[in-house]
Length: 388
Image (cartoon, rainbow, N blue to C red; front, side, top):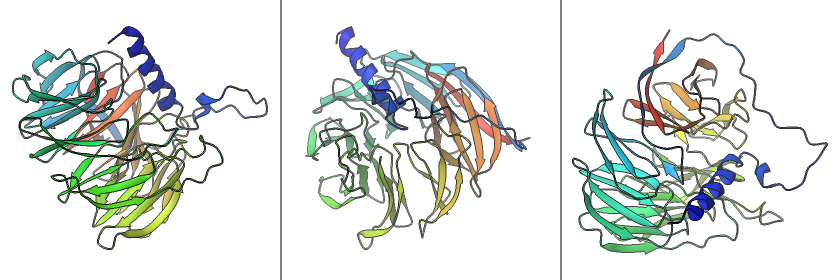
């Protein structure tokens, strides 16, 4: 892979992701009357929680061609950088081993059933042994992979940038099926992270639809549009479902860019409620509320059963926040200045804040009760919110 090829994709990813709050980065004109968009100023509040840093580790370079997340499996923390360096730590931050795969990694990683899975910029899905890091198999998909694969122990499924879902035998990597969707002319550079819940595979697509699929066969159980293509221009008709949906109490909740957040009753196969929103960030929940961050970096909570907006926090507007996570009654996000913010999930009020990095926070990741922060330099922090 040439250096030009790498730089092209990095630039494309940077423009789309950093400009997603308004797509203002795609404007080639200036409007003197248009107000300059500035990140919200952080105001003081009564802090009742603090973010304790348990440990931090450098894991690779600043390059990021897609969605890179750590994972926790059998009390080990796994992470692979875009340059293919696999690092494995125990939960106390002691490095167990590292391995150079020589891959340009763009969708990573998932660890389960003794197998590490990740996707590459060349469109390969790769399986490694979770104990040694040795390769088990690698198989070719149709396009670059920008999000982690998923597995149920029998099949490994990955979504590629061209809108295809591809399933492989987890044991030997043989291809089992492919699900094709029609990709619009203009889309954001990103895809929704597929996940398996209640025996079904769920994911969103760039055509504004969410699907419920049988993972072993690829047969579609349900596919519903959550956004309608009504814009006057191609730019206005971008409606990607890039955020990771949720399944909760027989409801599938998904959201799209320049579209809606929608709750689908899985028993009846129809929409139970919807609200306007524009987002590419993953949804989270406290089992009572659905919590989402919109394209302007406002955080909103919707009632699970009704979709009513229960609260809206504008204090992080335009601060390029990460996808939020929920942990024990708290909503946790990171921002462009390296701050980690803690909100009360009941009312959205700030209850904690800590600057942990000089770099923007790229991801906040929760696995069980383990919380990890990834900044733009590739540094991983293990953190814990604690009462002050």
